[in-house]
Image 1: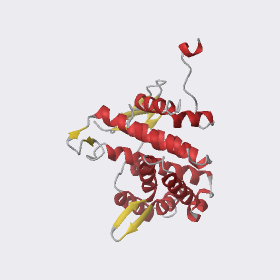
Image 2 (image 1 turned 120 degrees about the horizontal axis):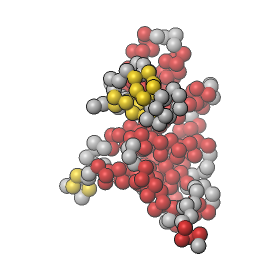
Image 3 (image 1 turned 30 degrees about the vertical axis):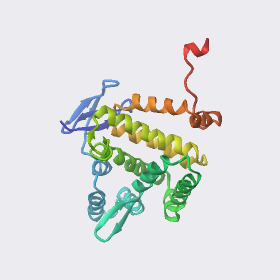
Image 4 (image 1 turned 120 degrees about the vertical axis):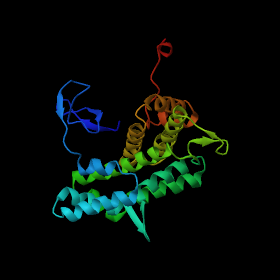
Length: 258
């Protein structure tokens, strides 16, 4: 049965309920929560196809042209999506995909410089800067859309035969193995790669939302993420990041304390 995520009106924590539920009891505090119709943002977040997502918002904009929230969404959509002939492409997702690609080659100085410049150029885009500076709501919406783009990368990877296969696509990876691979992927990109970049607020935020996006796509992926993170912290690159105060050190064990 399909499920949706709602937020408890009493304790503020999120939990899953059946898609067609009219009310539910919070699994955290037990409070009863009335469930209304999905918001426009919730509906959009469920759409994977960029063309359909863009068209859905445009339809809503035509129906409610004076709604400020819809208008703000339309603005960030114009920043996120670009159009070639009859196709619509996701510019936010492309940045993350490039980051994943460069993260695997980050030991090469030229490759690292290229992705650092791409991130800087992306964040310095005049239209994007103007949008983010409009209001706190606009800033939150930008990061919501960026997290959604990264989340789509991990959702799509589950069904991507190239991503979930090995040995020249002759062996199909199972669920747990895919989760482990995706966890290493997000650590390699959202932590290892970004630890080598200039530590701006945007770089730090990219790391935070990449982890959140992975865990939303893989709700049971926390253990795999922590394992991948600790493995990286134990390598030379990770130790340097810890020494420079960029990431937190590994938690001290009882044996270490002794």
